[in-house]
Image (cartoon, rainbow, N blue to C red):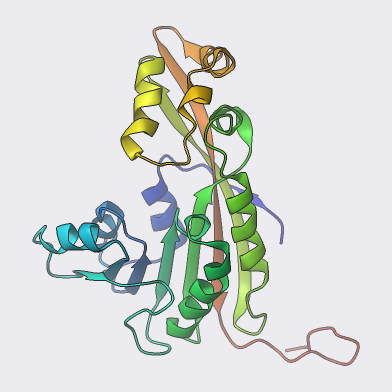
Length: 244
């Protein structure tokens, strides 16, 4: 698989350009606050947004979303969909945030619900590269979890997908000052953030390198792994795919 580098201005632009959405059935796994789910529905998809956190799931259902968007409480390992009925499963900033021992089961369940032909599995996350990630990693290191997630993708069944793409892009991040930068992470309330390291002189010096006039700008690396289901040709003698 040869990595592709494509310019996108936002995550939703990347998804919209890489995945046909209008009229498609989409399961959004780990939907969080539902913002991305709503964006998908606005672009014509019929979306089942699944969230494991009970409190957040209740808030999503209370938001009044209707029409093509349905919020449910549930788990990636047990999606409330029949076999082979879904056009696309979206895991946006999700797979690396589940326990490593659950990753294979989450992906297996996505494969179960996808249509056998032209079903799409869309897995996006932050890429562990670039100066922005180097800075963040000093106090919020998710590189091991992302590596485990990539390993899980490599372990998926080889007889399900006929194509696999790896797409990289960068998003601009801008902050008025260091407090605004730190506040972004503190607002997330993640217990893995090491506050003492975030406020260190070293991190502040890395942040200062992003100064552009009166603001601070960085490029955050993003990665998408996109898989399409289909009938895989049987291997010919010698291990090579049979000619079609």
